[in-house]
Length: 138
Image 1 (cartoon, rainbow, N blue to C red):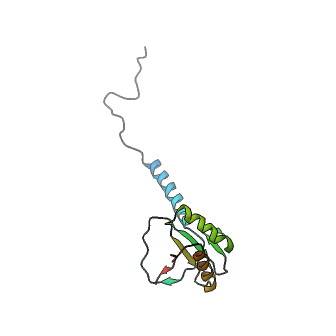
Image 2: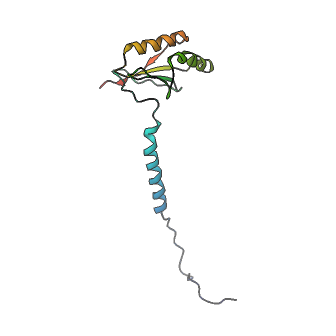
Image 3: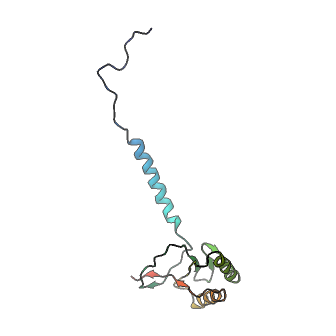
């Protein structure tokens, strides 16, 4: 049997404090990760939207967003799409979710011809309500 003295004496109590340094390190790493990834979560293509004075819309359903660049290139959500394939693709999506809203994001420098062509295709697909996305008035 061992009869030597131990490191702890009978009158001392163990330390009851929490070392928060590792916790702070982890929180700072998470903060940096969220700060880096948050700008990447924006939806769609980079477009310079026109300004308009209108209140923001409140909605619970994620809409179908058609983006039109100034060059006339068309995107459905984030994916480039040919103009001829746009109407059938949206019609198929609307069959699955008939109440899904459709928005057009046109660049401020986009000729009206491109926007009118897309709106005409949407009408041929049976979509009568289309929202135009703008920037809030400055």
